[in-house]
Length: 106
Image (tube, rainbow, N blue to C red):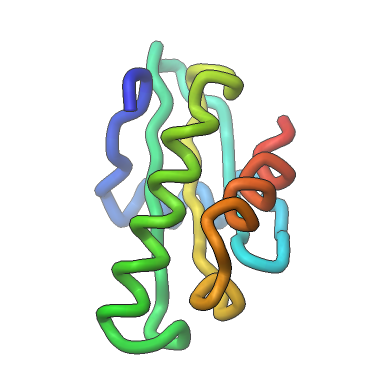
């Protein structure tokens, strides 16, 4: 991912949940907000409701790859948190990528 760095701090996630805009699709929920940096920051979460560690890690990998493939068409300078939903476990990567594009329409 060229113009994206990881979002790792818990307070940044909580700030986005409170003050960011939210878009919900069948596979993911996307929280986003502008930042003053020259790069975007991305955080991906998957709760235990999704399943055991194998399913959660697979969903996170699929979401990360869908974001990587769509990164060039997205504006730079955003904080983004993507929350996986239960339906994402059996989803194909193309479905998640389409949901990501729909959720990231700024």
